[in-house]
Length: 475
Image (cartoon, rainbow, N blue to C red; front, side, top):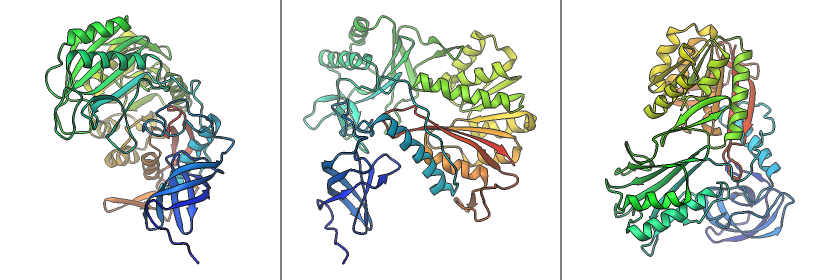
């Protein structure tokens, strides 16, 4: 007889069978499949049901009755409360295997593509690897200003004094802003009342120079000289920017940046390329893994026989420059003007001249026309989109162009699988939706692309996130 699940607050004991796509454990109770964060495959656990809908439920681990060998002690006191990390309880080797499985499952479930995915390339640093810090500033239930990270699927801020996946300078930043708030009278942003001063603190470490941005709700940043003084007591090289974001939005930055102190941009060197970064420049957060990822991309491009590279969503131009040095020329397409300007500075600093051509514009608008101007047979295309993936029209333009080789770099396995499915023909359009193509087989389809390799990279240790590079060849 099937056991009846009593719904919310029902307690039961079970063994974790597998991992879900977000790193949570999966356990069955009767006909119901429960997802339970912070549990490990093979563990016997006492659970409490938090939500049940149909045959899907969400549960909380009350007690680990039989811990798995892969379980380790988390380093962070805010782990399970803060939404930043999901895997600190899991041994690092098991994290790498989990991320490979996440990519493999996404391709199979979303696109119907069955392919082997090798072990995720490890990060040399499992902690203290991030060169960027982003902190929301808000108001707690008692009306006090708090600095921390959002809880999972929430805008409730979990206060922290530091973060182990960031270097120790993150704790210094938090300490400085706490002092500044106490002495200046600045207030955290109240999302409900739409009041307050500070919304976010964003910091970028560029080879020991720190770009600090205070995101404010209004035009004023009170006693900014005090903040500059406090930052100067902790950091020898820094700039302070104010960004104004008065919109009702989840986007961190508004349109207006004001330089309050220091240099606007800082120079650094990576992979043999000198580059500049400002407050809104995209740079991969893990320099060591970024190096491995970009080296692999350049190697594939060089071996492809192509003469020209196109780097779509090119950021500050680091990868574009690496491609330009190894090929006849490389185009970089980037919508953020500051990043495109940094790419122009990088081009000049590295004396790349006509070998590197930067275009400031939206990829979906620029790429289709660019593909009509160049000899597609001699192009190697790199597509490194944001988490939402590639615009459908852009994917269509790639298919029409006839480019022989494409490398897709993605931080979101779900949208990556969708876009790869479109380019391989494993997914076809059905109105505004995509559905699995019954004609698709492992041998591929003429006029589409086949997968040459899939390689995950652990750009984000201790978290559920994974960076993936997929290399495609036109059939």
